[in-house]
Length: 117
Image 1 (tube, rainbow, N blue to C red):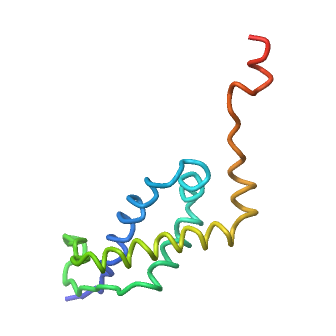
Image 2: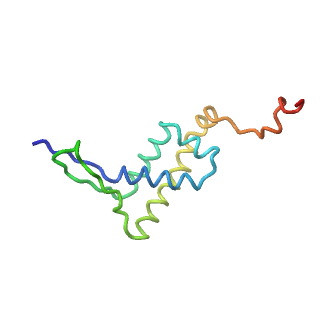
Image 3: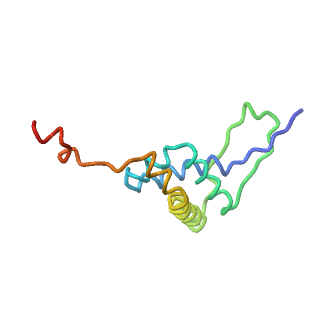
């Protein structure tokens, strides 16, 4: 039988990133991390800074993964702190890409098309 090593941390991390990003403004944070390249960079950044949990499975196609292994408040705080640091790091590192792909939002009332009704 073939056994597969599965990283349980990644699944929990993706959920935690979603929760943390909801606390940030839509522009530019949520928009920036809707770009797959930046999201993957954030995931890699955080995974390299937190403990990872793995399981060996005999039937990986039929697996059910548990994502609740960050039990203590200290573990949860460490995870969220790494996510916050990662968000700032990835945005600073990719400022040009973010500015190019996510233009500044403009108040619709200030657009020339609204000036004349």
